[in-house]
Amino acid sequence: MLVFNLHYANANSAPDEFLAPAVKQDLAIYPPKSLMAKLFIVEDLPLAIVWLATRRWT
Image (cartoon, rainbow, N blue to C red; front, side, top):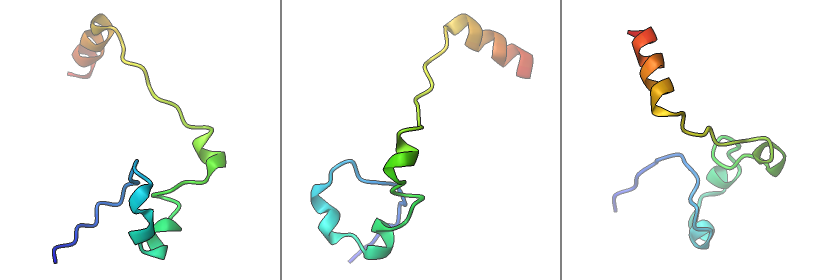
């Protein structure tokens, strides 16, 4: 059997019963709800801003 260790949480909770306890308790993979509440998604910037930032870096 081939096993991959990808170290990211599965969005599907159905197979959680097959996870090793060490994986379920790893806070880097499954952070606590208190931390999850503080996370946010960075919105895409307008293309003109991306272009300008790229020019500044190069």
